[in-house]
Image (cartoon, rainbow, N blue to C red):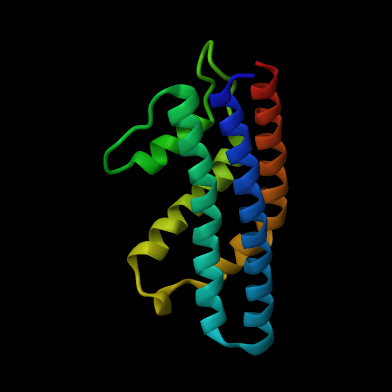
Length: 156
């Protein structure tokens, strides 16, 4: 395996460790928000959901730049990047994520945008709770797909 591919694999694994910790903090924050009724915990949960997707996006950006050789720019580059990861890049790599994971992550991508652009007191608690409930299963599935992709890179 060449150095560039090794670097991508290393970055995937490093980010997954950080993302897993962020998932833990998200779940703990939600538990405390429900236990105390303190919506300031909900703000922390929203910020951690933002961090969850941002970490995933860092992995995807690295793959786009180092493996695909490009990352789109422009207003909707986040959306394009996610679509790029769900598609095979012929003769270079398979799809990084499945359509199922793409559809789930698209909601987190959209929520990341909300966190960056509205006041925290306007967050939708029901939407946040729904995202937190599906987070552990989503993360475990995503982690499996990213590790399978990393294994593909290591065989190259």
